[in-house]
Image (cartoon, rainbow, N blue to C red):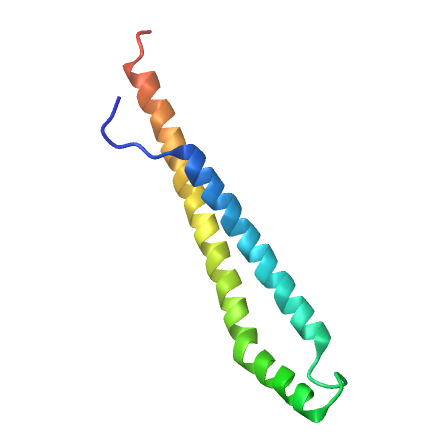
Length: 95
């Protein structure tokens, strides 16, 4: 009917994948926090773990937050698109 279309199935797949990214990143952050920077064995390993947590802890959270924000925005966009498409279809249907 209109020249503007989106592939709603692919968008739903993308939204689902972004939801999984959010879950996986938050899970990784929780597991990383449980490991802790001490008691792994040698001082070198403990220090490496501590450095890794410092370097990646915030990054993992930012990835999760970004995926969640993108997920929510795309879901709103998809919902609005489907609603508008349905309303347009009703408007052009014979009554």
